[in-house]
Image 1 (cartoon, rainbow, N blue to C red):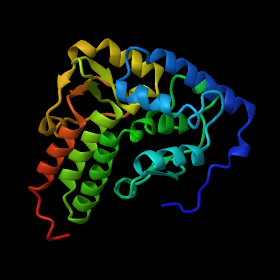
Image 2: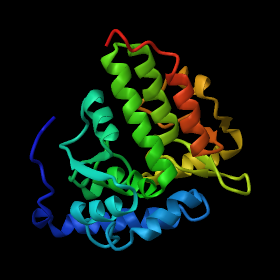
Image 3: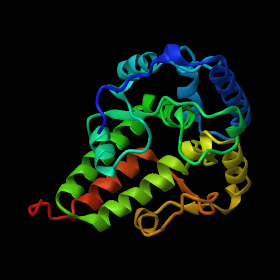
Image 4: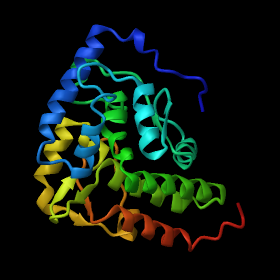
Length: 247
């Protein structure tokens, strides 16, 4: 993993801040009535660090995150190997890139940028239940990788995709609301996912882990989760079946 990377906030130009402001304001309005209470509550708490009119400072977001749930942030150049990713989560660290998409990329970018990484992923980590799930997810991923359980690791990657990136979560009234960062950070994905809210599949751990996904097209299948604490308990139960003695 690359070492010693930092944000270099002073190098952002006016068009970076303008693009960020457009992305933030457009998506914040778009999520009203669609995003989960968990996400919107946490996003509201971060208004001073995850700023709306300027590209936010990683150190400011990290300070707020660490005070709330003990998590820190790691600046990375882009996508990182799965082992590095699991190890970061196990250490209560979430990775973020610091590059901002170009103005003509408002609606689509091939590789996640800072808006996806921070606006989409960081706010839920202020929630203790979500943060605990992510930490345990990382610990389990590290253990299974070291023990050579590659098929199980694939199941974990699918779980991440269908919950953390493209999941829905029921609110206390039983309504399905958006949770996943891949939806939260994309205007088009939000519109598409919300249009399919009446065809969501009920979350079942084994079913999700057997459902493949593609990263090169808009999402077609969505699962709705009832409870994050229950998910962590189910994940622990699933993990208990594996023999780790050969790692």
